[in-house]
Amino acid sequence: MQTVKYRLFEPRLAPRRTKLEVPGWGGKPEPRRDGSHEYGWHCMPFVEGAQYGIELFLPVRQRTARDEAGRQVVLEGDFGPDPGTGVNWPPFRTFGEEYYSYQLLVDLKVADDVAVRTEPHPRFYTSTVNDVPLAVPALLRTSWWPMISFVIFKAPPESCTHIFRPGEPFMQMLFLPADPQFELVLMDEEEAAERELRDRRIHASRDTLARDTTWTSSTDTVFDGTYRQILRVAARAKAKENGA
Image (cartoon, rainbow, N blue to C red):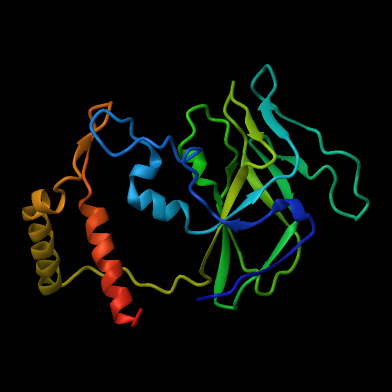
């Protein structure tokens, strides 16, 4: 397990492991059964992906929109008085014509072989009103960079407003290998055949694996628990291998 240490210039940012909130941005607590509406938490790959990093909370309310002509980014917020600590105040600035920046008042210390990647918060993908801030992906090598950094956000489209609300996460940060040392290689025939055989076995067993977990949502989308069932088996096998 890797350790990520942090220091805060603004304690109300409250970094924590990302939580999938149900009820909340993850959806309503509707059971997996016929007639239910589908939500993000029904999909296990989304659930795991959404909770992979840490989330941050802005302590003040901020609105980002465009002017009536749809050209200029407009930033509005109740930031209070300048704290007098030398930080950029207010912490938001326009950044060109299509972006705006936020002075991120947190320092994350990671190992030399780890980097910090800024990401949109996963609730961006579940919002139906396009009001969630859109953080631009960026890779920060904070093992040697202790400085305050600026996070860049994409400006909202015309007629939309991004809203930062106190107590509501506004971005996610992931911890990844600093150097992506991988090589893309085409599988040889033997390995490809093994993968194909595994594919066919799962497909042939799908009715059994998905027994009692198949349901059709209110939008006629069919779901089943095959992936979820195999994930549980793999997790138990790993725990047994590790002596848990």
